Amino acid sequence: MVKLEDIADLGLLQAPLKADPTTKAATALERVPSNYKSLDTFALPKDRQYQQQFADIYFLRLTKIKPAVEQIAYEAWEDTVLGGDNAKKVERVLDVRQGELCWVAGTVYMDMPLKPSILEDVSKDRWISAPTSVDHYYSEDGRDQIMLEDDSGRIRLVGEPLKNYFLVTGCIIAVMGTENANGEFEVIDLKFADLPPQPPRWALSDKDKKTKSEDLSMIDISAPSKRIAIVSGLGFSGSSTAYSAELKVLKEYLAAQALDAKTQSSEQSKISRLIIAGNSIAEATSSDPHSNNPSTKTHTKKYGYDASSYNPLPSQLLDSFLSELLPSLPITLLPGPNDPANSSYPQQPIHSAMFPESRYYGPTPSLPDEPGWLDATTNPFESEIEGWRVLGTSGQNLDDICKYMDNPDRLGLMEAMCRWRCSAPTAPDTLWSYPFQDDEPFVMKECPHLYFVGSQPKFDSKVIEGPDGQMVRLILVPKFSETREVVLVDTETMELSVVRLSAE
Image 1 (cartoon, rainbow, N blue to C red):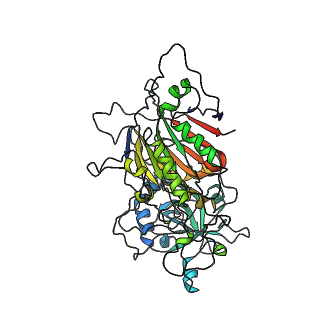
Image 2 (image 1 turned 90 degrees about the horizontal axis):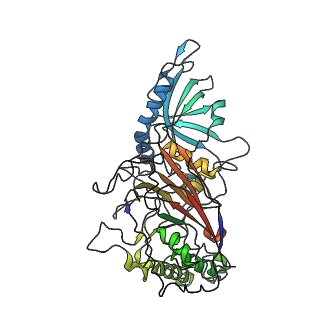
């Protein structure tokens, strides 16, 4: 069983260290190298268009996941007999007949009155310039309905077994039951696709570097220990300086310039890569003189660019933070909802023009396939780090799913996304998304070894297991601006440690 280390409180501002009399000169620290291969799973074409229909995403998702769901349903319900009737498969939702025991696979649609509707906005002749934001979609008066649909039509699902499962729009399921007199499908049992096949360790790396196939249950504890640092919600802002001390402590810790020499050598120098999981820029507030709050403006511009509403200081502070770390530590940077990137999912990399100092550490034109030490990537992003398949997001996918229920179990919802084989099931219904036509990148074709979600209220983690021995480490990465916490992942044991930084 993978162990989880206790959270450690570290006060990093200490008195200067005394020189060791047994040594004539300080020993130079050497950062462990990072084995890293970034994937373009969620990269959009440069000439992308938005005229196409969004419904194609659901058809692509259903086409990709439905065979796996039907296979699991067939194995579970092949010999099922109830009341003298054998459960039989029907190909389409509209082929369900009243009184006949059958099972069918399709896409879940949640009919919820509180969900935002673009059709309603268009009918009111109202232009929406940004995604609307509501606290939750569920209603407390029982008006929510669960539907199952495919290209033939839609049918309402009812029954006690549905209370044992959490469902959202866009997940693919198979249900067994029968149609009642009201034209509703009485569900007796329900099945998901479960975890997809998991590639072995080093599957994407050079064949010469591959030593053997490994998973979380076959870990080589004799290999050199490395750590991946994951942080989210740095929240650089130009309106307050109260938070700058903690950011400076974070920079010193990651650069192995804090604590004693023994700790620097044994722990901090073992950090091979830093992953920044979104929201590096703080959300503008009404107290910020450069905020986009309409009440603080003396005038507005209906069209064009209003330079008075832009504050360059947060991005400059982020650029300075990155440039001071990059000489010694490679960084993977994901955009978040507050960062200067497109708002629709998947978010594309933050443009290098935002980083005049640190962009020189990015990819070079002569080696376009090499990510460089600064890898500004997409959100979500997929990569191979130290041989492990890693999937990560900045949190919009999980935050949107949490709006479907009261008191959500965030780790449980992460597990549900893995077992649904979809990292963003609510896109494009309630999570704005690019209208894909040829592929659906949110479908998990291969099971990750590590799956993290950033910008979460608090840290949490667990390991889940699939039917074929797949094991996935799930991590909720907290907002650093609120918790002052950094998550460290041991790349050989997959054990976690959380470092809480303090400037006191």
